[in-house]
Length: 100
Image: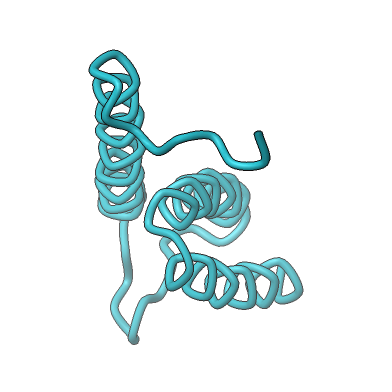
């Protein structure tokens, strides 16, 4: 279980780096990270019971509600960006394609 937790922490650092380069790519990476963290939580809650977070026992509903909220926020960022890009494309105000 410790290697999975270490992988989650390292991948969270990668998400932060991606987020500094692009808000949309960072939101996609963060949403994917939330899915991985939920998978980790399912396994951890089955084997260990409540997880400890800063020394406080976290029941499953708190853990999954928090990750669900983070996932929903990032999914909203991606959806908003896709809608905005479609509107710009329909109006013709988007960026011109490069390399043409």
